[in-house]
Amino acid sequence: MVKEYYKKSFPSTKRKYRSPAIYNPTGRSEKKKIKASPFLIRLAFFAVFLFGVIYYLFFSSQFQITEVIVEGNSLVSKEDIINVLPQQQNIFLFKINQDREIILSKFPEISQVEIYRGIPDAIKIVVLERENKIVWQTNNEMYFVSTEGDTTRKISQSEAGNLPVVSDTKNLAVKPGSRLVSPNFVAFITNIYSAFQSEDNIKPVNFEVTETTFNVNLKTDAGFYIKLNSLRSSQKQLSDLKLILAEHRPDIHEYVDLRIDGWAYYK
Image 1: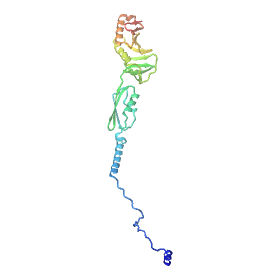
Image 2: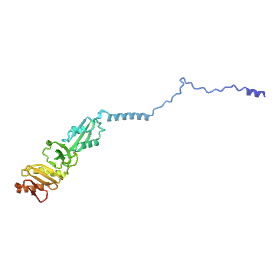
Image 3: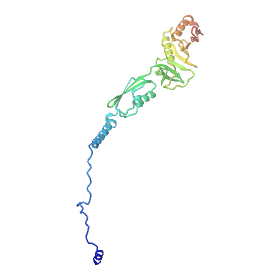
Image 4: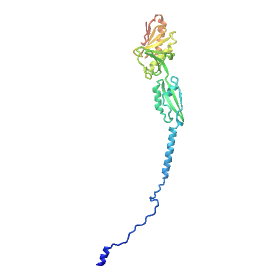
């Protein structure tokens, strides 16, 4: 009994020791070294290269447009065409279709536009202008009218030249760039005007339209006017006029009416 009491009263003095830690003078754990993947290195170089190419092509001055060539223009000046386009553009960012529409909308005298890039810093604009055939007069203003019957632009009287002048007695407003008359009407007026120059030494002064373009009055320097139908053959009406003048020239004081096929009236 004494031995057992002794063991319980006095616990064992045997110590437990932990394994000694590895000596680290800095007190910090060692960091693992990360090795760069060859794929990531190549990807980084490619990204830098791509950025350099994009900057060179789209943002450097090397490809900024410095020269604009315009061909085919006579009614519209080169400077006017250039001024409607955005300035100091990059040649690759130049929007050909959009700028073509800008030119067509700003200049009714132009019917077609083609634009070409000239690398590195030039563009070429080739235009096809409408052929002006007659002059339309309304509200004391004059406008060129093309072969297609489109009003191209407002002009001064001195610009009319030798083109036939058609006066609108109703003085209706005209919008440049819009369809004013039919191509058939333009052809009729130009045919009458050119052929009439040699008819019995009578010269045309100007044409007049009232209600519609079907009926046209042609004033002459002989003091009378001629009523014409623009839907009939111009040559046939001129042939009828020639016969009337040959037989009744002294009796004509006011007009000759050729609008009805097979008939001719004079006053």
